[in-house]
Image (cartoon, rainbow, N blue to C red; front, top):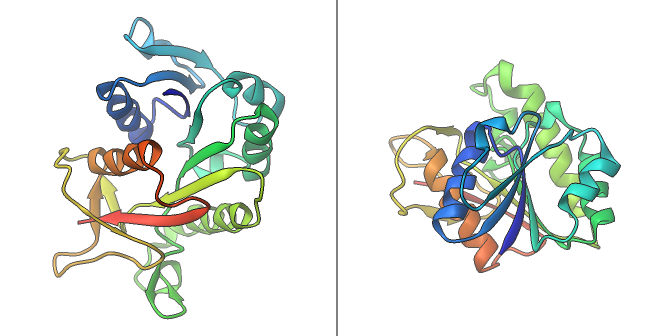
Length: 202
């Protein structure tokens, strides 16, 4: 596929880029400063501003799908969604957050006492983004929430998928950036969660 990846140089975005390339996809890699991607085979680096709705729409137009991997507090969900809609691309995958996942019926992770205060604003913004997507009827969107902990690791290709409930084991709730990327690109290639949120964890 020909994929537009917004936030291609970030922690998650760089792993998604690597996973896309390993599977033979062509990627327009959009970042504030994409210079680190110059000369990378299969990649067309583009400088883009997530707050520039018209500019972003022009950058992602003509692709088979758009993947958004940006911090919720460093972007505007309205402008992102409107940019994709204006571009004419229907398939939109969003790197989500874990805060809006349920840990018990009606109890979200963000509302538990142990949820770190420093992540609350980002998680709240992520939940608002998901709510806005759930009201979206034009785009074929998917929102992938990671487990409670996500960080650098290895690509094992072995993980579990869930829907709106946090995945956890006795060892906790975690997923590597690398395996998160596998799950997201799997969804891109074989859509199973159209207009839905799902989650990935060990």
